[in-house]
Amino acid sequence: MARMKKSFSLLLFSLLVLASCEGSSSSSLSSSEAKKYVVSTAHDYYSYAVTTSFQFLREEGEVAPSDVYDEITSDFALGSRYMDTNLSYGGIQVNAKTLSEKEGTFEIDKAFYDILSFALEAEEMTDGYIDILSGNLNWLWKDSFPKDGETFSRPTEEEISSSILEMQESSLTLEEKNGKYYATKEGSALLDFGAIGKGYALMRLKEICEDNQLTYYLINAGSSSILVGENPYAEDRTFTVGVSDVEGMKFKVKNEAIGTSSVTNQHYFDVSANTLYSHVVNPKTGNAVPALTTAIVLGENAAICDVLSTYFLMLGESADVSAFEEMGYSFFFYDNRRSDPSVYLSEDFPITEE
Amino acid sequence: MKAKAFLQKHLGDIILFFVLLFATTLGTIFLLLAPTSSASGANIFCDDVCLLYLNLSSPQESVIYEEERVKELDPSLYGEEVEAAYEIEGALTPMVFAISQEGIAVLSSGCPSQYCVSLGYTLDPRKPIVCAYNHVHVEYVGEIASLPPSSSSSGVDIIV
Image (cartoon, rainbow over all chains, first blue to last red; front, top):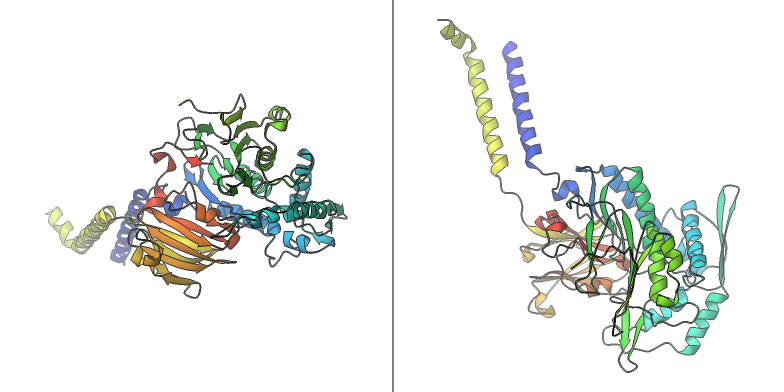
């Protein structure tokens, strides 16, 4: 009996030694544990590419608990399901697809109510230039961009006017009553969360990161909307950001959101007319010729960065940046069609010296 | 005499101790010297379902998980550089993925933006491959997934 006890103790000791060796040989940076490049969920907000990659989700050198990943993933996915104009989802009675296809008053979830509330605020902030009821007009232009050997067929003025009229004759209002939330949609306008979805998602994710005391993170919602905490690999804890449209340009950020609008991946250049058309369409004029080719906005609120990057790509320097700079946002505008393509750079934009 | 008596009394325990110590040492050496996987690959997900594993080191050893939704294609149809090609069923349209020496590319997709196609061949985790229209994304695994982005030669952590 005593011998058995000793043997068991020795065996246990051996197992502990083996286990500790396994633990010490694996790095906290291993791909399976740290999930530095986990692409957890990718869901569409508005029929266009959205990427989620949760990088550096670590807390003081330790991996964030798995339930934090789960919270972030489920929150992002849930937002997507509300804003998806293509599909309906179980458990969500009313989403963007419903409101796009039907008219009437619908009881909605609080989460969707909050998204729609922000969309209406964005419309007010941009004097109507960011309008979630502009889906018809946006699709009119997007469908005209040729694919696979097709020829470009520019929308006619009649088609554009008709889409604008459809939008103007439509409305979306929200109401909260007795703890319930309602959305009233009138008209045949399609919803489009193009300028809002990703930034809104990041704004929500930032709250989750802060609630969980996460310090080091980089959340990439498709290169055009990015949220960063601190960089654990850099001495100054900043992330170095390159700009694909501007060779050699780099800037450094930490604890900030980056909103980028660019024509690079979504545009058509009509050679015959020497005109560049983009996916960003002015809802008041129906014009798809952007004032800039790249607009980058830095600031605390990812949702506002997303909105403003689209707004300024559309209007360029004809829109006033000063009011937003006073709110703490900084801007970089670029237009590769001009002889001097650097259009505007805020004084405090953290560009690095080359 | 005392030592001899001790040895005689506890011989079995001593033998057992050294056997266990030897086994522990062997196990430790094995763990420390065992080759870690350096293969790079990528999982293709549609929603939360992994459809396909692309083996970037040996493309012919890629693995189809959902046979009803993935079809292996003849790579020679897509160019000399293509080593393997697969068509997958996304949420809304089919997509064609290819592997070459330069990485992974979406050769075609039915999505309106074609953002995923415009990325071309890439092995850069800083520019993840996603077609959100089709609810499809790529997750890198293995060595490529374990490199910190700041180790890149350009010194850029992310590209907008």
